[in-house]
Structure formats: structure tokens, C-alpha cells
Image (tube, rainbow, N blue to C red; front, side, top):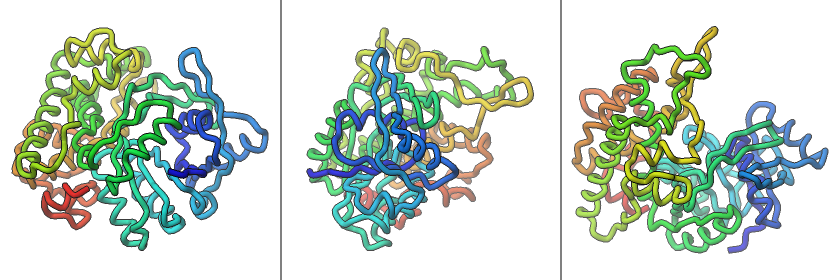
Length: 395
């Protein structure tokens, strides 16, 4: 697999980390596509002054900068062999629409992370633009927890996963691409057999809405001072852990139903939440005995607090945070839509969707079905012309 130029889309936390990590493991060209705001100016200054983004990982530091940056896709995407999209799921389609016309035929494009149903949107946009030879992939999660310290200057990488799953379409490119990504990202990228695995094994859709539901159900108007904002992962209680397990179990039941309907589909990499935590954070968890302790004693999650918004001299829960806007319409609702096709009931997932939809000011479920006024904005199969399980399973 000959990859000489990598283009990264976006300038958020993950992009900062990826630039420095890849630069230390890749001798080719790194481009940056930044279509919004004034982000380009910061990175152009970084390039002009020959400075670096410093990524801090424990006691180690990595340094990197892009070779070229632009807000116009044709300037940084047309020569790219590999395009990485480390962006929230709601930005995937608008980014794809901007870059796909500029892609060369043999390009590979992927989302880090994919969340649920990335392939539905990507393959439709490629088809609509006569770019069906372009290959796609998605990763199950971000390889790290990371936070920008100073924009276009420094980023803290707080925790590194042992392994991250990756699936591609067509499937035959997965092994070589996983090997390349393992090298440039400096961690094990595990090949997954299909992209349906990514959708079902999207742990963000379990963890983020589940913890938000547990922390704030019945406390929607609670106010906090800075020091009293609840810890997010380390704030998981026994009751929250029970909710998380229930979501995970419903997804596992759906997975088993799909496997029973089509014995050829390999979904063996869809793990229960506790098993996934232990596998992904093997060296970071002090107490692996329960889901609760896997969160409470995970050093990669240390000190991270729940998303809040400032109001005068206090803070309120932020129900427009990405933990909800990302992991409900591009996560749990996709699971719900597949479950309906498979005739599998998901009562806990339904309750969480209904509650969080009200917090977000959205309507996805109406009368027990995905018929709410905002369902058009969710990444469910039928919004891309797919009406049965067979159409989903082939990817």
C-alpha cells in the first residue's frame, strides 16, 4: 500500500494529536483541510515560523506540523492517497461533500471514529459524485483521549488505547490498511471483518448517552460551581453501571439475532462493554472487577468532568454537548433502526433516546417508531435508501 500524502480534515483535539503522532512515523507529506473560520491562519503561521505542535504523552513529547494547509479541498485533497476525518459525526457528510469531487480514483478516505452508519453516507456521496472506486474505512474509537492546550501549538494526549478496531470497504483492503495505520499511529489497529461491526461495536453510543442519562436524569436544572461539576467517567455509580450494561446487553441481543438470520456474517468482534473496556485499556485500569470499577479506576479517564455550560456565576448540564448530539443520532438511533428491521425490542435504549431527545429539543421516536420530525437528520439506513437487513450486512 503506497501512501505518500495524507490529508487530515479538521483542526480539533484529535487532529492536533494525529499531526504530531503521524509526523513521527511517516516521511511523506501531511496536508490539512480547514474549511471553517480562521483556523487556517493559525496553522499557516505555524508553518511559516517553522514551529511545531507539541504533543505531550506522559513524560514523552512528539513534534509535528502540516506541510500545507488550506480551506479549499482542491488544494489539499487532490494529491492525497489517504484522507483522515477526525471530526464529529455530524460533520462527516458536509466534509465528504466538499472533498469527494477533488479525490483521485485510488484514494482511501476514513473517519476516526466512524460512529454508526458512516458507510451509508460515504458510499452514497461517492456514488452520487461518480467516485465509486474510492475506498472507505472507519475506526471504532479515537486512539487516545486528547485535549488541545494551545491552538496550533500544543496538545495533551491523556490516554492511549491498547488497540482500536478498523473496518474498510471493500473488505479486501482492510489488512494492509490496518498494518499501515498501526505503523503511523503507533498502536495496534485491529482489522475487523465488516463495517456493520463498527456500528454495533460503537461504544461511544453506550458510554456517553448512558452516563449523561445517569448523571442528570431528574437533575436537569442542577447548578454547579467549577469544583463541583461531576466527574464523568470516574463519576459512574453502581446505578449508572447497571444502565450501561443494559444498553450493551440490548446491542448484544441484536447482534446475536443478526448472526442467526445470516450465518455468514462475522460479528464476533462486537464485545460487551466490560470486555471492551478491559481489552482497550488493559494497562490503565487498576480494578477490572465490575463496569463501575473499570471506569472509576481508569487512569486514562482521570479528572475528566461532565459537559456543562456557564450561566452567570454557575454551570448547568450541557445538553447540546457532543456526547449527545453525536452519540444519539449517529449512534443509538442507528441501533434502534437496525433493531426494528431485525424485530428486536430495545426498551432501555428507547427510554434513553426519548429522555435525551427532550433535553436536546429533538423528536426522533414517535408512537414507539422512528417517525419523529427530526429523524431525517439521523444516520439511519432508510435515509440512504436501505430498507432491509440484507442491504446493511453486505458492508
